[in-house]
Length: 357
Ligand SMILES: NC(=O)c1ccc[n+]([C@@H]2O[C@H](COP(=O)([O-])OP(=O)(O)OC[C@H]3O[C@@H](n4cnc5c(N)ncnc54)[C@H](O)[C@@H]3O)[C@@H](O)[C@H]2O)c1
Image (cartoon, rainbow, N blue to C red; front, side, top):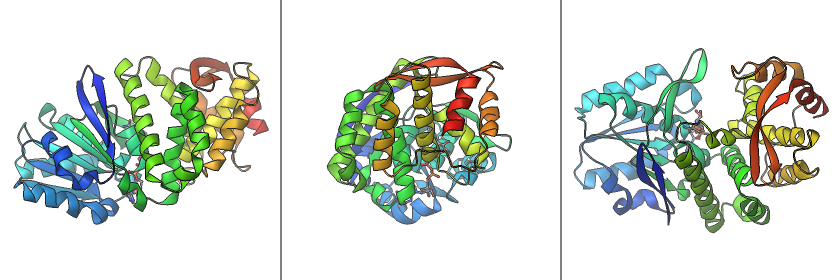
């Protein structure tokens, strides 16, 4: 097992990454307090809730569960309200704990319920997707979607602990697993060339879910996220670099109605586009994008825009961000593998990259 301590102004907490952690109460029980509401979704609950519930029963803790339908559609204000209702019905006091058992959807919603109930109670994150383990569960961003926008309602609320059991990733759908790897590659691309090279050399064992490689990949990613969050808890400076690939990626997700690509898949394509733009603008050595494409393809991720996606629509969606001016768009670019920067880029150059892809 590996432990990373995340230090922020909002609190310091451990992130445990290891095998078999769900069945190891000695690791996580001490981070619980009061009555416990376990929030999960119907896929994850079917696989892991009984195991967690057994631990809670054995220590005689008062607890109940709230099981939501699986998927992004469940990240609603109505389900956040259901979580608050469940806390009230449980008789939860200020010392109560919310235990988020699931992917990023459960983590965001449960975290936001914990942030808002009685002005903030503790939350322990037990992420069960690769994306949630390497990204969503660490850093304290919580929230739900509004009909007019994703993650429109939320709060910063750091967890009391994060328990990332890599054994849970075995049951993950292949596409969800690969989508999570896009965020792992991102840390290498923007912060750590050695980690990027290590991923290139370990793509096969990672694809095969080999525990040693996976443990190292998740742990290294958590350390990167922890360092960025510690330096910039509220996203003023360095945290913005984590958006590498995301401006293109979000536009692609929106243009395709959030139905065609997993978030990580859209980010993979977005990272390639952002790197091609970095090359076009002379920021990074030509050939960097090809190296990135090679690694992403090895990890079974898409790297090219589908031909039927309207490039002008993507550009229009990218322009929507309030921080942009009419002829320039703020984007994260690469200066080299392992180093990134935020720049405002000419729309014409972005158009050229989109049209060539
Ligand atoms: N808070 C943050 O900083 C942050 C960062 C990135 C993403 N997010 C959010 O995370 C969400 C996406 O997270 P996600 O990709 O984990 O999606 P998700 O929570 O919807 O999980 C994806 C699917 O995998 C299933 N699943 C989860 N764990 C499983 C397991 N171990 N075995 C089998 N199936 C399992 C789920 O039921 C779901 O169907 C988005 O809502 C996004 O906005 C938040």
